[in-house]
Image (cartoon, rainbow, N blue to C red; front, side, top):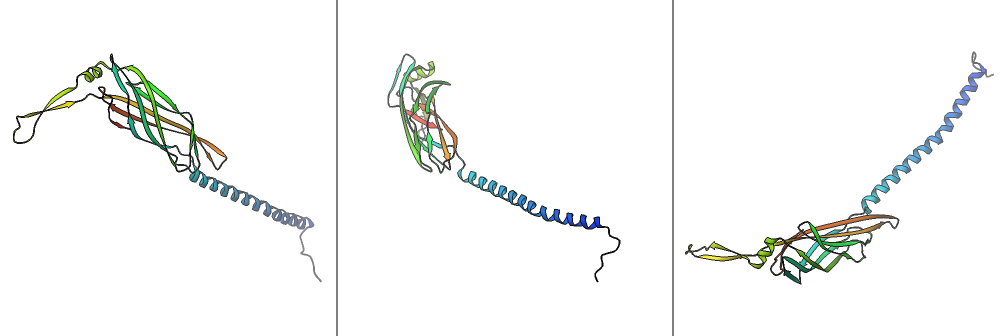
Length: 220
């Protein structure tokens, strides 16, 4: 015949049974918490991977040519037609819709002309050329540049060879420097849901002959 353990009150069995039920009910709750944390970590990792893969980047601008096809000098002022060719590359996977883009020309720190570039779209990973041309109205130039335009400087340089006493005349033309600023603005839609604003700018300094408007060189 089975006998109960001596000396144990009935309350002991009730407390032991209630503790067993509490531990068994807490196991599913802990599993749910772990599952939720795992899903959150997985979602965060997926979002980080998508951001690295599809993160919006600003377009890349490269100025390829600058010309002044029309140029005039009168009474210490110059006026010209400014032409610039630049390539704009969209490094994103999504199309770039550009708008409110502009080109500005400045001399001696002050703007002398500008124009807005028509809106358009550049497909992902593709390059688009932007050709701009506009007239810059007459503006005053420095007196030294105007005087140099009227009379170029001649420098005597010793000639090399068996007769070092012979000199050669080297005509050094003056240089008038103007600055151009090409600014491209637009937006990129990532995964067809998130829209991000991007902007890029390229500044170039252009050396121009004040005598005839020839572009002597430029650097950006």
